[in-house]
Image (tube, rainbow, N blue to C red; front, side, top):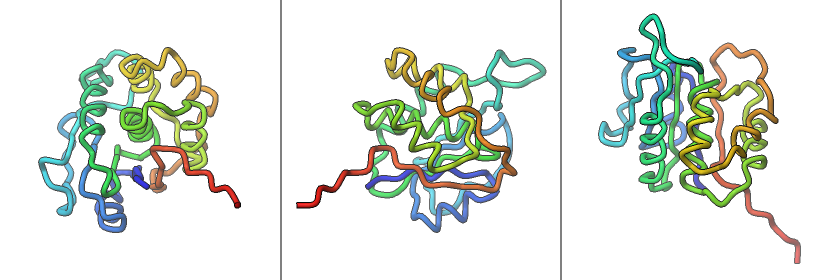
Length: 179
């Protein structure tokens, strides 16, 4: 079953190697420098320059834009799902969980938004997905407000220190029936 690994920047190399990731989405402030893990090919790395804000940028800050979300959707749809997808931001709490949910819906659109966000909360008590990314993703993926409502329903996550990577399933776990 495919997995999405959500990580803070400080642990991307460890997570990429531990989980055998070959593809990565980075959501970091514009021009923030970091080293892409060697196991991730440059052509399978999507780097998006944005700040963790939910309103128009000022003082040089860049708010998430429709083009950013279109790129997340396009990249996710090209993910072969043979190995986990690594998604990270600075702390792994806001931008990357939002991108993970958007990627999950891009590859498996026929799933329930509430069940998806409950899986996200079960995977991490700390996530508070970036509302602007979620709103744009809801629109571009034609969720008709369901994704926004589902994210609001799980509420704000617990305070985090930015050192809590987690594994997230982009699709529901299969139900086994005893026979």
